[in-house]
Length: 316
Image 1 (cartoon, rainbow, N blue to C red):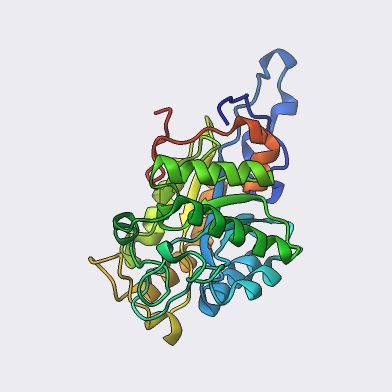
Image 2 (image 1 turned 90 degrees about the horizontal axis):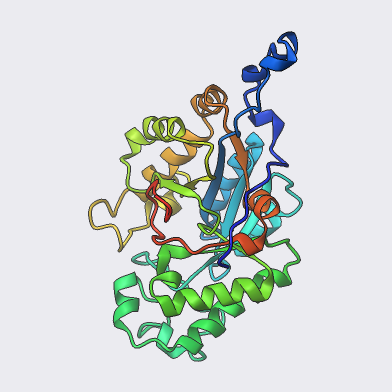
């Protein structure tokens, strides 16, 4: 995963590209027509799919818009089967596995696919994944247990028969050290999967943006999308329902009680007419990880220097 070749551009969804920039070219003399610029590409990645029925219901609303996106499914969570069934045979969706090593809510918990007794260093005293990345980092985790558990999550997803295109990492824990990152890269290589953030993506998220500012921030992000490399928007969608309102985020001390408002606001922003208009105004093509893999090839993947959600990449 250390060589990069120049991407080719194909399988761009025509319904999501502004075509006005090429109107009238036929009327120009051939000598005046130059090579058109690359189309700016944006990959939308919806995280935590399968975490709960409410999250799945939000994904269903995004599906109804026809927007191409990548869906990262948490197969260690109770509602993963509903999620994968919902995503089956959706040609505009690329399905990935959101590798899980944390269970971050105060009262809503999940455990390893292998069971806590099989991977005892990965769980707390109740047999659940550690609530925070800090707690995981402080534990004396066995790397072999990490490898076996993440492989089990991949195998669980594959048994459903849904096509899997890529891997990514919940709360960044699975790539938080060089040793952990090496495990994830090995698993991607073994299974012929892509890895999110390994295609030179410039990345952004609405996670830490106040609910009332998410739409305006999304519009600003779209204005910064450039054609020199792919761009990634990471979303956390949900509905403001009693199920989601009851969740308390142990990793977000600044705003732990408003997860439902945050996730509803992200869904409202990405399904809004304002989003569609901005995509057209900026001439952005929406792509998925399946598209990026076909364009660049798995051999082109390069580990980013940072796995966070800023708009910067290793090359900047």
